[in-house]
Length: 120
Ligand SMILES: [Zn+2]
Image 1 (tube, helix red, strand yellow):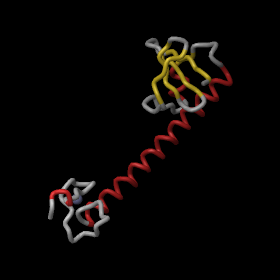
Image 2 (cartoon, protein in one colour; image 1 turned 135 degrees about the vertical axis):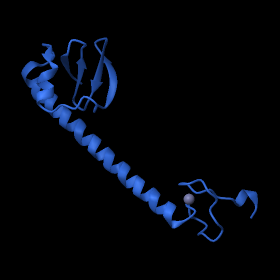
Image 3 (tube, rainbow, N blue to C red; image 1 turned 45 degrees about the horizontal axis):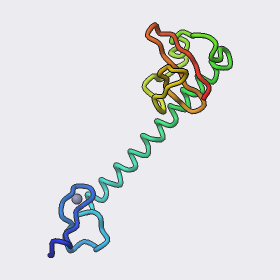
Image 4 (cartoon, rainbow, N blue to C red; image 1 turned 30 degrees about the vertical axis):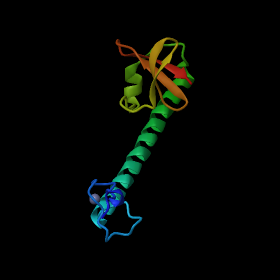
């Protein structure tokens, strides 16, 4: 085996034996299956994350119809509706305030547990 013919497994980074199909990216069926399983789990996690962002967005949508951006509301209003603070799209700045973005809405959580809602 010449050095430029050495192929490394995309899963374990071990050498792919010559006996494997020349297009194979994996050294053995186990690595192939483990990689496939991890991709499936990853896709599932992304789906769950997207769903949780949507649920948070729905909660803020309901509250925004009531309060818009005009009022500071208590974080408890969101907590009571099952809001998940660890789930958001990105950290952004709105009106010079640090905020978290969801889909249609964002919010700023202040140290005193009050929240300002934003329509994006
Ligand atoms: Zn491998």
